[in-house]
Length: 595
Image (cartoon, rainbow, N blue to C red; front, side, top):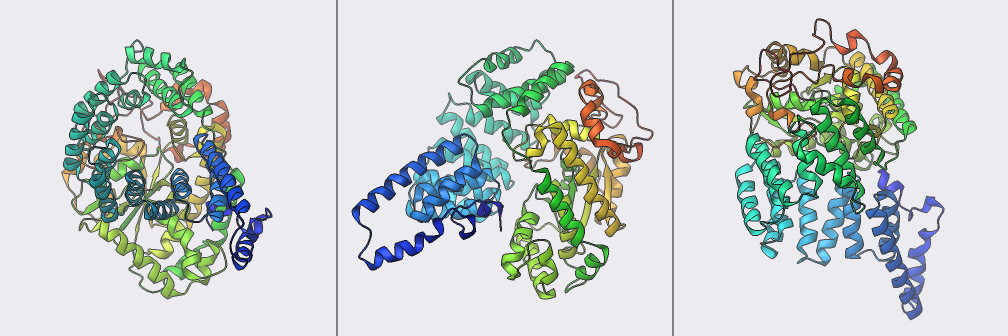
């Protein structure tokens, strides 16, 4: 059962008492329908709940919003506005299946509402359903051909599925239709970045900032691009001025703090940068349940023993998953960099960060009809069921891979489910990216992550890291020799030999093109978007030292996670020589060293 369903107050086990509503309705129907006073009272109650759900949604209290919406939909199952709002809530909570189902039901009631179609199309895009997303967004475009929201959503869909030229044409039209709007320029900048045209991207963001000086989004992109190497840049003063605006929303204020943090970091003002990052993270209102994470790791450790994985992986077709490559590790450990390197190969399709494995885990119980929750339910699955689930997934990604022989899933959090991957896909390639824990954790804290509640507090980051290290230790002992490690510091130092070993492990022929991967034109939707489009620099190695005076609690909490062996730093220089643009370069400047 998913976490959204667990928050559904209509569940009979919740003790609130809405479970009897269906019986009440049946009794009323037998008496000829609801009395008028009941109908009026219900409408008023739904109206109040709708307002409450909107207030919770606007305040980022998404689980509470879902509770209110669940009550509405219990009383009025086809309410299109409640279905639409529940779709928005589900998107925020990364529950794509529920979002798509909600938007589809809402659209069935209002088929000509292009706004519903846009949201449905965006959810389908995120879920990798290209054909349905295009059909849905084309329908929205037919209804509202000049809508800015439609044009941008359609362009994003084309970007995500590798059609940057089509996206560019739509965005050019949007810029012409809305010459005073920053939104199409921001989208145009991101599309230019997909095509490795960094100079054009920066120009778009500069224009957007000039058009909308109170919009923090272009400044955030420019800060990520390393555009603010001097603390007296006029944009920094503008960002500081924005912080004084009372009307600035919480999300925008948060973005301003992170942009200022990046700007001060580029300018070498470490204390000011850390202060801004800390303020940005404090604005993130999202609880992190350490106990839930630890219990989840414990459950996996109990189930996925060496004997268990070996016996279950032998079920059915033992060649399952030979076309799949999974890249795992902590966020900011080099996973995007490794994916970008692999994406340069003509036999590889880079699928980005996908939720497929998490969705497989969530569906195992319902698909197989077993009683135990994941991962214990795996023990009750037949070999035929395991085969069917695995082959269904392989067929799904084959449709997305444009004929490429290998498909890359770069979801870092799959590190918690390598046991499941090993059972379902015995021949899949598993790549584990590792980096100095201090650099990894600091980089997480400095990133404006969405949906990572553990990343907003140093103590929580250290706890999360230790749980990640604990479960990865199990996978390495269970799957001895099957997991290929790429250490970030070694990749930065010795790009070609590390990359050759990577290609050899994946069964890929060597191509010199991989050393020029920052020129590869492809959609990247991660925090390392700018870095993977940039030649190699080594300032990220040992970056934590710039902030050492602030990191005592973090380093203490990491404890024995920090060692010279763990960091892979033997023989590496403490720092590099800065080039004219302020970044540290190595001898081979054609390969990127992004986070």
